[in-house]
Length: 161
Image (cartoon, rainbow, N blue to C red; front, side):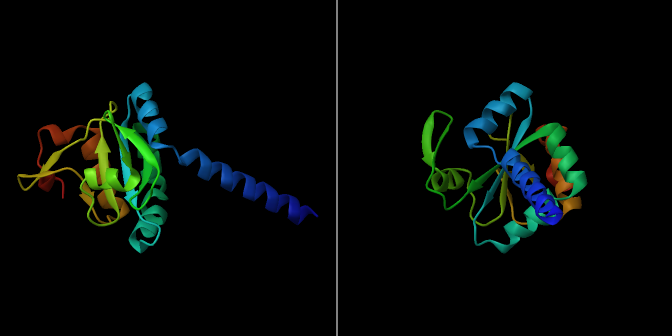
């Protein structure tokens, strides 16, 4: 009996934690604007092994969690999803929005200003609109600090990596 109660409590907290992390795109934009936080758009697919690894090893990392919770709003975008999303006055399917953000592989990470404006930066003087691929926790932490501290406004990303 006690094992059943403990099991129910664990399931309750696990589900509550998952639900609290999953914001709709609209809710993420509103939260970011009201809390003056930048947005991380994690573009993924259900079949992507590297996406699952990034969820587990990067977004699950305690140092990453602290930075994200303090300075960002995280939203996941299913690159093969059919749900409708309003962004910058237009309506997109999740797939169309992933294409708008120029995601061509997964995972892809996009950063937005609190008002929803796409953050662009340079890498070797080449304009970048997204961060393609998997990055380990240490690399991703550097990227989060680069965005959080607004280094993208005057520093080429190659100085960080």
